Image (cartoon, rainbow, N blue to C red; front, side, top):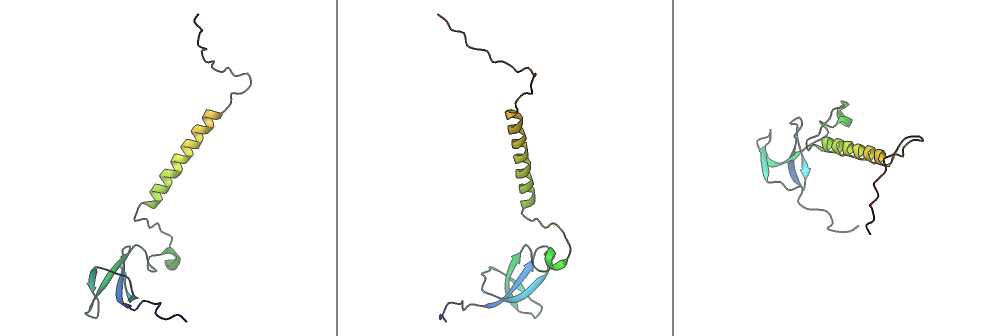
Length: 112
């Protein structure tokens, strides 16, 4: 086994779920500038997370949309734009049906 490959700075850290406010005290090496007072009266580093086991649909069994950063809206906007572009491209490249009159472009006249 290789020696000295694991970090030595494990310490108690509080993780706070921003969706439901749940806090979990566990050991971690993650860096944090914020601190919080825990139930035991001690102060620990605080790490805020957008989703944890207390709010994730897989663990809760509830299907709910958690989109803090607007990723779903951005995706839907890209999808709508792609659909519009596809329709416009199809409309442009559509050939007229048989018997349908097409617009003829004016030919430049030669002078001289």
